[in-house]
Amino acid sequence: MLKELRLYPKYVAMSVKSSLSYKTDAILQIISFAVTEAVSLATIYLIVGAVPSVGIWTFEALAVLFGFTLIPKAIDHMFFDDLWILAYWAVRLGELDPYLTKPINPLFQFLAKTFKWAGAGELVVGVVIMCIFAPQCAIVWTASNTIAIIVCALLGMFVFTGIKLLFASLAFWVKSSGVILNTVYNFCNYAKYPVRYMGKAFMSIMFYVVPFGLFLYYPVELLITGGNVWWAALWSSIAAVVLITLGLFVWHRGIRRYESIGN
Amino acid sequence: MIQLINVEKHFKKPVRGKGVWGMVKTLFSRKYTLVKAVDGVSFDIADGEAVGYIGANGAGKSTTIKMMSGILTPSSGEILIDGKRPYKSKERNAVLKNIGVVFGQKTQLWNDLPLTETYDLLKGIYDIDGDEYKKRLGDLVELLDMKEFLSAPVRTLSLGQRMRADLAAAMLHNPKTLFLDEPTIGLDVLVKRNLIAAIKSIRAKYNTTLLLTTHAMSDIEQLCDRVIVLDKGKILFDGTTDGVKHMFGDKRNITVMLKAPATPDALLRFGFAFPEASDDLMQVKFTVDAEKQHVNEFLQDVLGAFRVEDVKIVETDIEEVVRKIYEDGVTDNASGDAETARVVDNAGNDGATVEDGE
Image (cartoon, rainbow over all chains, first blue to last red; front, side):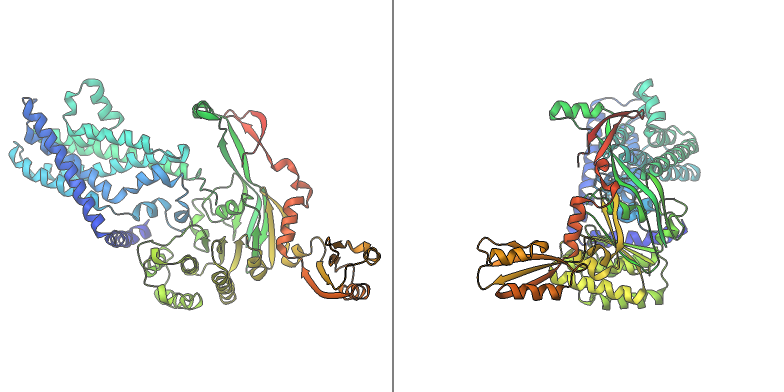
């Protein structure tokens, strides 16, 4: 594990150098993801403009929620994007071979080799949106809830990664689990809206089944209503531990079934 | 020391129906064919040995190497490399530190970066000491003649250059054992010859144990003292490279071009040596078993019986022998039972026997 941590900067450096050999591509990726997110925020503005605000959820509050959901997603996107490749191709095309013949953790090698600029674009958009709209909401900023919301964002990244690892690893059984992963992952888009008003059944699903509501929506709700954000941090850490453990478990079971491909 | 003890690897393949309806049925069917890619393979390789591992496509060579290098887990049996199993998570790293692997059709190099970047990462992965790394890289660059493309991005390399670079990557950490899976595939004659020579000198220098799969028998003849022939997941032959050549006797094919057509009388005299004459009787072919008959005496007989224009003698090459092994099979257990596979459903009940689809 220590060796992996020691090597991580080297991997990131190599990945960044690799992607810089296609500079235009890297820049376009950043811009396109930033534009995509900006457009979806504009959509929310149009919707909110058409209806009166729902409870505490003014447009500014919604924008803060929107900005916050982007942050854990973006960090995960930057560092663990290759889980999509695991889900869609790597198992089916036998691309895990080279990582399995080296004396360090194969999952680490597989994930460490790619750094995604597009995620950086999303992260910037998320942070900028939060910085613009948070002062316009009636949020009382204390040291405690500031730290708590940052902790929530970091824990949120691990929940994202855990969910992706769990469903991507199903590929060892079904060869390509990209569609399954995509379906589950897309539930995160609902967490950009006040989950609490979406009906009891759906809210329960968003909190306890696919916990995007729990770690993306709940912290912001507490922040805006003046609740204790550390509760959200607690739930996020539970979700992170459970999902990362589950994901690693399924990965380890799966890698034993890995079949590579014939020549 | 490498030991394989009764290793098997099974793959499950869903039984596919025909047409669109068949495809839909496949989705819900739990039936599959059990393909035994490796079916009870046992052998030992001593330190420093060079072994050629050959067989037709789909014989199970790559599968065996993948099990030995930590990629696949055997379905049953045991693989011990210096007493440790590469497919056990606790023993894995200890084994992998001491092996190097090259797959001819895949590269482990970073495509967009200069070679030195990949090597530098490997230095970290294998904990290679700085001075040791410099010296070794220097040696390998020289042996494999890599100086000119050391700082070019990997994607710009030719196949031959990439192969050499991959070989160097596999040798950087001074592995005790080197697995080469079809290293010469797709290379032209000259590049191939250089690569083989380089592998030879690497082995001479570091005394690396070598396991090599290839379809080119010349690779084996030049590199290996021992050959294991695999067919349908089972070992057909395991012995010295000379041994496999002489498996069906030390045969010489002698072709004689004549000045005048051969007479039936003269041909009859050689009835025991199975002469085969061309239609115009201007050319006769003999097959002589050098273990049973002196070739020089036989030739004198031929020269006495015919008016000879030219003589050509060809030693049977290993390729021909191997082809014969595939066609006939030499051992008893090589008979048809490996060809068939069982259809099993998930409950473990045996179903009807079907032909393996491969």
